[in-house]
Image 1 (tube, rainbow, N blue to C red):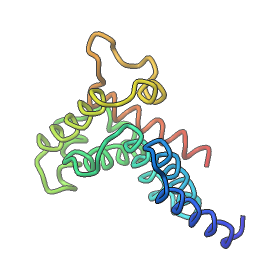
Image 2 (image 1 turned 60 degrees about the vertical axis):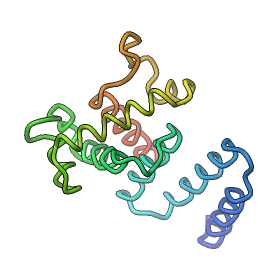
Image 3 (image 1 turned 135 degrees about the horizontal axis):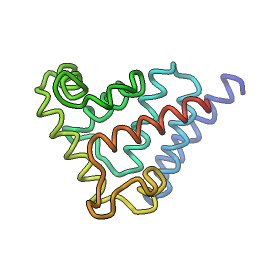
Image 4 (image 1 turned 90 degrees about the vertical axis):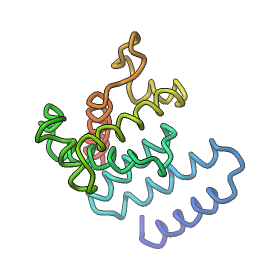
Length: 162
């Protein structure tokens, strides 16, 4: 696909997004915009865009405090998978907190708030698509570590396909 064809597709996707009347049409158009954008971006942006797209599908608004913390945590685990085994102490929460000028406990709470919100408000079909049977039905939601691990695995799989 030439640069001009790619640009034309992007413009058409943006027009579809702006003219969409239902949430489903908007989601589909945004997905197409993000997919087209990922073709022209560097790998780091691509991973972040994938995470943003997944969070959008899961119904996470960008205004939540933990939104950026989740993105940073997943990107760190994508780059360094062993970090998922060290969440507290000198681990993931501390790194996310340092990057965002907050304490490790604030980063952990922000991430937990987003995870709770996802599992309270998200459509079950979408949850099943990303988490399948990995969630304990007795608890009803994923832990922060389970959520971050699953998201990072999804992103790694999608990056391999690209």
